[in-house]
Image 1 (cartoon, rainbow, N blue to C red):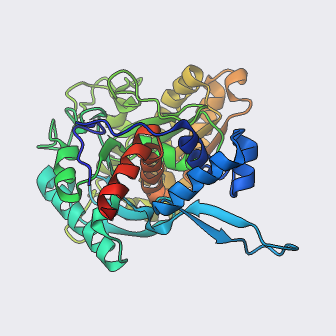
Image 2: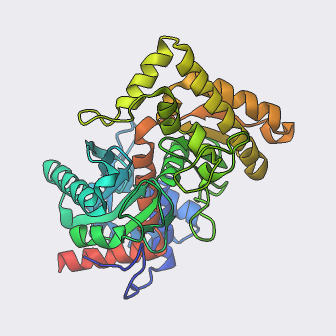
Length: 411
């Protein structure tokens, strides 16, 4: 299997993929075409060329061609899809109290997922080893060859250097600063590793559902507050150095005396994050037996109409709404998704954020704006990781790597 350096860098560039092959595979992956005739029609390629490329991809085990189950006269058409044996994707969405892991095939079909109960402050080696072992267990349980893992994607709850595959001065993550997550996991899986901010993956996951319009802005309200932006073209906007979306350190009005974990005072994350609300109400964020203790207790108190809990949630939502209104003016998203444990308190959070956004933002920026909570819940980061993996695997460089791997494995 191929080994890279950094997040996606290659020590030896693979042989370039013919444009025709890339076009054929791209149409099947996007589901724009499902048979040879459709591919020829949409691509403009000669049927003989399409046939050669399809035969090549089927022979390499990347595509499969099956008879359609649709009832038609005459010979039933043969349908092209990604082969289940083309490989596996492994994803880890690491959070402060626990991590979500999953495996999927290259058609983005989720095969299995699980939770790893380990706190992020246990350090990168302990967390990554625990995550790796659980992923390997899932692969074994579902009879997926670990040597055919094509991509590993990891989401981290802090600023990430996307090119280097590591966290950069994250708060509340001792030992993670500069630790090469990509190198650590590549040693275990011998596959390309992509490391990104967790909210970027959540935003990708929501956008990949196809029911939410882009540009899409996802705001995660958890131990901190972060945002991920998906452009109209479907790409993650990361900024020049990967710091885009770190909105929890925007200064909030009237919070000048509140110290943030970053060392500054007045950050909106210090007064309006899920962790800040729990601290205000005196609710422990987690216990030894329950890493989600705080979220459960807060939800129960809100459901019972506890006045201090309702006030704390609505006040936090108002502060978040002020920041979101600014982002709406700046990026003019079509969809705004609120995610994280606080988003489970749907009515109180949504109503307060909507009120501020519609009051503060101009009508042109809000007339087509949809404000909602996550459709996928805690699994949004996993689905986003799967989407990011397939983007890399089916890029021109990724296809070349995939074909090279298949050549090595069949040699």
